[in-house]
Length: 186
Image (tube, rainbow, N blue to C red; front, top):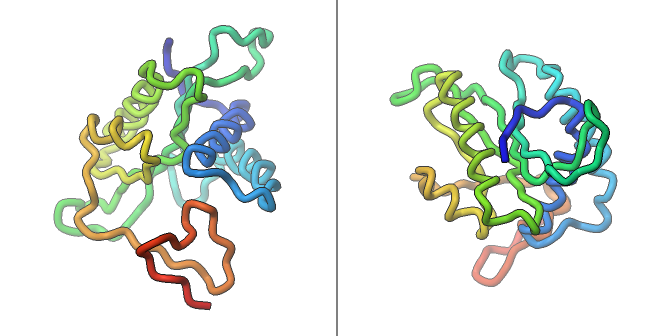
């Protein structure tokens, strides 16, 4: 199996893989079904380079399903994929450019997991970041993927990652307060 750089034509399949990722996190909110249309549109635009203020834009790497009967030249079914982009933060000690990579939507279809496809995609993304001089890459990992990321050098953050949600915002299932967490105000 080989990994290749995704094109805008892969946006719908990358969105399908993103839904697989959400399933690994514990499912998606059934009332949020229209996210897939918006996600596919945004991925297609961003993979085409339409990201204001980010000269290198969004990149995705994918592994095609070799058993997909799609016609040559048409986007086919994907077995694995991941999306990345470079964020610009303020420069500081250890990062004079402020460039920081982010990886999202790493997913492999259930029947193709544990075959090294996620590692191929991850290494392609990390090579992309290294080529662009990025020395720090962040991601959020599902439990099932954390071993892969740790084996490639990812570590726990030095400071805790905190998030703010607007009062009344609907949280995805994996962000709901659970036992031992503070209840949300508002």
